[in-house]
Image (cartoon, rainbow, N blue to C red; front, side):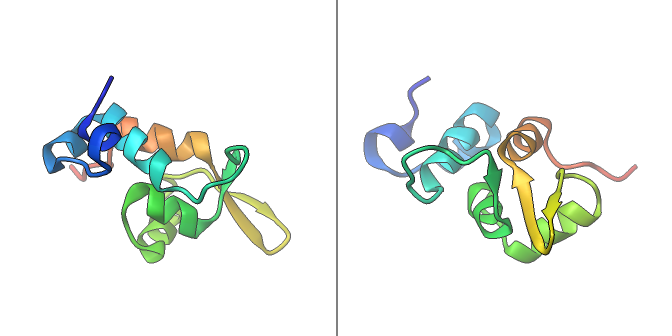
Length: 93
């Protein structure tokens, strides 16, 4: 799928409603590395989700994102962020 982001570096707000466009946008916003890391810091997850680090913390506390801890380091699997984008936020009944 070719979106506006590929052609001009911006994304149409209506495209954010399409999970595949949001994933593409999020992947472009992550810091450039030789290989994509399987685990993201809370800051990287916030950039990918276009939200604050505090919001990512709330999402982790609610169990919406999988968290991996290694000592004092907190990491979020990339697949957890992508799954959240596809699934969308949980709605209260």
